Length: 351
Length: 269
Image 1 (cartoon, rainbow over the protein chains, first blue to last red):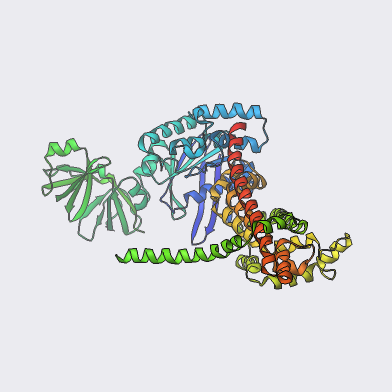
Image 2 (image 1 turned 180 degrees about the horizontal axis):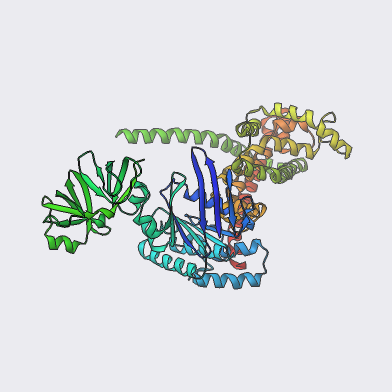
């Protein structure tokens, strides 16, 4: 198990601040963050390529904060693969074994096996300068896995692959994880996170701002940043009024929401998932629903089918399959009702 | 004719003039040297000895100093050194110093009164008027070429590759020899050839340290000042030809070696 305890690290203007993280054995942990959020730096700290200013890194109950890189048994695969250009594929995969002075026979055997597992055994004699991105990625993975790392760190492994190669690699990573390999994978891509992660951490400006299972994080985003990752576009800054149980929030355009549960601060942000919003021509009769009348201003294709924008004083964004749009004969300019249950509203601090 | 082509013409003419400026004196010297004269000079034992001395001493100086200069260049490229700019300035100093002044400075250091001279004389060696002293003079003025080229070479090696090698279990020493050095090899070779060539052609610092044994530039000067232009010319032509041959040979060797390295890697793999 990996534990990061109160890790701080300053790099010029940027700082990783108070990072606490636990990754259990066999976990597939995805660290999600934009470029410049500090995710690569965090991986380099875990690998030992950089050292924290304060805090501790514990791996399998052993404090490895100041341990030499070579002894950590933490493997890292860089975003640009860092395949050695002056060596063949074989030379690259054999490198960790050669520096450990293993015998030629052992090296040949292990490299064969590692290459076969990555489906690159036919490339062994090739110069790495002639490899495709996907092949380079596999060489880098084979080279790292041959060291049997306790922890495999992947820096944006999918970002420069095309879609079909991405799927192949995802399959490979899932297989590795299933075989017991603990993986920490950093990415900026929400899709990668939900398709691979067992747990997700969201990192922003050098801080981990939310952590949990995929469902926990994306169904209850802790703030607007996490929400945007989950494809949520309905944010409303409101003033909260009333008491717990019968709270309401009012936007500056006077849209009044009925809210279930509690709100700790007066100035709050309401989030509503796009797929929680239902569009109808008639006013819904259910009194437990928040419903607003508005005009369709835009219908555009989105990752989830179509995204419909409705101007009801404030703008609402609803996701719907294209078939649903056809069924409703929905077009821009039509008057509609948008509705959603009070419990679909997530209240977060306005700050 | 449009403006662009006027500009292109201008650049071409100016470039040709500069090129001609370099070629013309050399070509003139070659044309003014008669075959018999040249052959006589080639057969002249004194000339042969001086050319040979120049070549091997400069090569030895470059080779020996490269053991310190290459790691130094690596640290300049990779390490956060205090006062790095100052250090860089010191390295470049020999390029801007008048070489005779460099020779005088060095003489104070390696004569029997100097620190190095004292140490050498304890070992029974007088550095002044000795090939070892010549090597030091050559190295003093030519070291920046090797250090700077090697530093550029190391800087061009992506740091990621070194980090990856460390992560794969290599020690810092192994990373240096298996990743940094092979990848910076081309620049280092260029620096090596530059230092060798610069050392070979050095006159000012060398003549102060050692008039005898005579290196080729000193010999050419001596022939010129004692006997005149016609007598100095064939020796100059001979030295230039030998130096060119040597430089081309070294270049080819380094290119071949790079190719061979890759092949060996593939074979043993």
